[in-house]
Length: 282
Image (cartoon, rainbow, N blue to C red; front, side, top):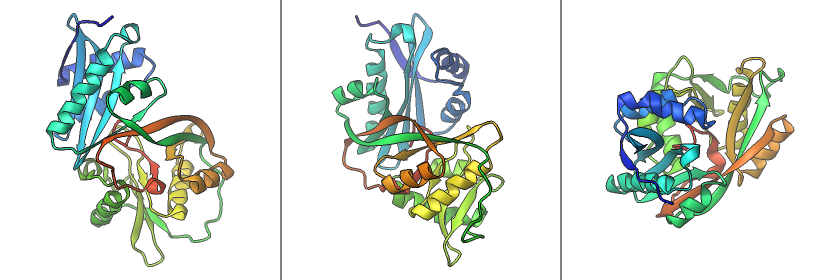
């Protein structure tokens, strides 16, 4: 049975109660990301309310011609009553109203049928993998191929990312490009050929068109992971060579999601994606 509810923009004072709903539902603390969304123009965070109580969330992210549908969450006790569908449609409306011609999302098995009814089609699976950190010290056959991010690396990073994703993610890359935490991979001629950043909410997007650079960046991420913690990422399942290489290095599979799209095809390269900003914006 449908539950009477309203959808409205998320405000600053909504972040804590919205985050609590997600924590209670087992999603962990998404407070820092929600705060970032409220404060940045390319994001449109929404809440669903029942009887003036926040019971759900959704986030629209505009990345040039591509819009991401993310953070679709509904209080467990109110699922199956149409709230998730209404939230998703509201996010779609925001993205299409902003001029996005392609929409994308990452779906769980629970969410996939909902998104199919809204016109999304499955494109490729994502394998979530993890490994204990830090990893064993290994000799790099080509030392010096990684270094800390510099301010003058930004144009190269933006070009690499646009070529890999088919999106304009400059808004979130600029917000995450911190020289104290970012790392770039270098080609034999010293050019930047890949990157790893740390977002304001603590995740680690990694993009590198070549397998050797992607693996090098991920293994560096593993080496900098605290003892007793796991390094985690998600790799498109079509990148079989990358997954096989990482499995041979001790990375283990945990679960899978599916990337779904609606609208015009997106010209992207799954083999270049080694880590996400998060599952709400790829």
